[in-house]
Length: 127
Image (cartoon, rainbow, N blue to C red):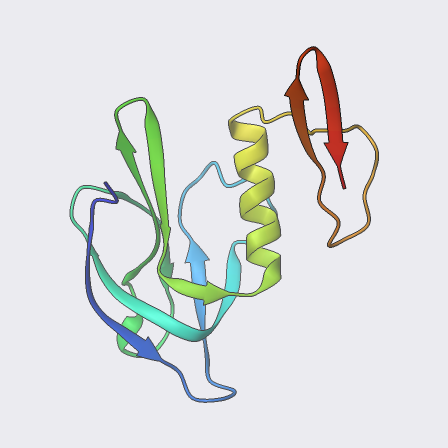
């Protein structure tokens, strides 16, 4: 359950952008403002916590990132397509917050992904 209501998805014109401002105090990255491109979803936060808001146009002040606590977990909703800076910061924050361990301890180049699988006492790493 996301805890939001989506009113409308708006497609931005080529070159048109908006900004998302992170509003929570425990956001770890130094950057608190990120660029939104292509699509923005006009949402209402019904029971979810607003983590960031839009900065411009008729979106100003509307939720851009939300989190809803559900059972023992959380459901996050991103109401706009963002740049890769936001995604990198968001995923790093999630990894730290939820103590996610990497499949391997090697540094991988950007774009490479590693996953681990176990079977019959053996561990297999796929890169």
